[in-house]
Length: 470
Image (cartoon, rainbow, N blue to C red; front, side):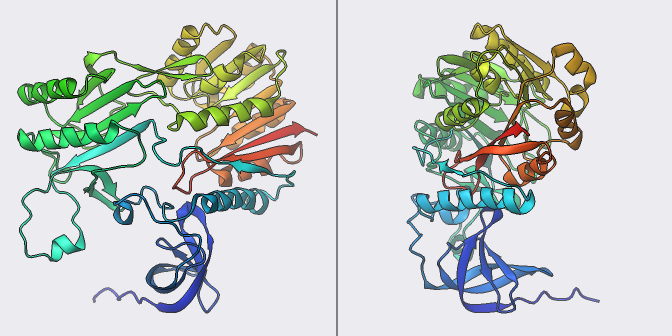
């Protein structure tokens, strides 16, 4: 018996009324059910073809525009329609900020049922493009083709690509000739490597067939101007690898750190691989308020350097340190926040699950001559216990910056048990932040909250909340 064919619906002249989670926009079907859309802006009036249908909602696509919203703007990127990396590029930046602020506030109220003080307006980003200090691109010998190319009778000789994965297609890469997320020489370096590889018969990786040579490249351009380039090869070919690396050195002598990795695994993560230095240093430096942070190929650092500085200033301001406080920095990463607030604290204790990040934190503290920080590696829910607190002291202030999943319930329970005077909660996911804050509202009052836009042209937003003991 064949599979039952999915029924699609057409809804005509529907107004898009809001922006929702994950960058999708919202309309209402005639029966009142929500329709989530991906190619519209609030204020558009459109005909919609539905795809997925669920009990409470539809997912759909606008197939005809009767009226275009005054919130729209022209995308600057020629790849916008296909890339999906900057899903809000067709919405004016002031409107992006409005919907980000609205999402954060709604999550805190609706999910957390929290009483909020007057909300400090979201902090926008001065640079709306070219703000990322780190980009990763993939090579492919079987690039994604447009519908026009597929339907064309012309034979396509060159299917090599260097760019981004098409959403939902793990083996297809969109060939990107200009990305607006990272400053030059980002595009120049990427396009040079692609063209040199094609000209010199260096085979591009095919993820489906697991063959080829050029696999990925990672490019970091620090606020200091230093540049790190890491090329990932699927297999070793000394002659071709050397030919390429020497050509890069000659074409871009400003590169501070040129490295490579040979990775024959099925996946392209490099965190379990040996990185080999080819030229220059094995690291670059970021700098913030006089502090230096050593960045290696595997280091974590906020990808928007300038806005990270603003985020950390808000965090430090919320903490209101006088120089006498013991501060715990939970999920410290490479210790950037811990070191940023250290000069205002008596002592800062950082805890992080990733051992390599803790190594970086200790090294950076040494580079910056910071002597009132200590860093410890381990799973937060296991490390953050009575023994740890008895050893290192009961904190006056806790700063916590967890991953998107938020804090483990055991960590929240321990925080409530030790009852610091203040908690500064930095979050990249206001939904899980609201969930965690709801567990604390019997003992803590929210006295400040401020969203920070770290990623213009996307729906992502950070939020900082100050909790004070009741």
